[in-house]
Image (cartoon, rainbow, N blue to C red; front, side, top):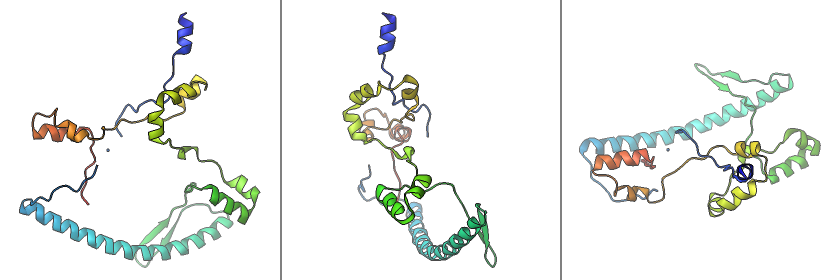
Length: 201
């Protein structure tokens, strides 16, 4: 009898992560102290300058990238498949070579196959299993059925198939936290502990 119950014990493949690894309405308008108002103006000015310089940097980056890509191809053909530095007048950049690619779609693979042949596609492209993501809403609505269906897998596969999931604050948690906080400091601590996302833009 004990053996039977041990056999029927379900393994939950969706373990939760054990350690730490962080809704956005604009709201009302506040008039802060002068020190904060000055910081806001300085922040906006720095942001505007950063955007300007980012656009300028992109133009130069594209020039460097075009040159570096062509040089990389020449180096690769001669057996040098590694990163290299490119000298400027006073500084330098590094062209970083990585053994990784961006995600490819079925359409990308079809184009690749048409352009370079089926053998090249077969030799150079593999499935990216790390890119598989569940539709969280479908999983939530069918959690028990999914866990039940996965029981057909061997226990060692099932226990290691998925990385541990995280927890998150419920929708409306910030509003709900007011009922548990005795004062503003407590509420702030609670919101930080829940890692409620807040940022300035």
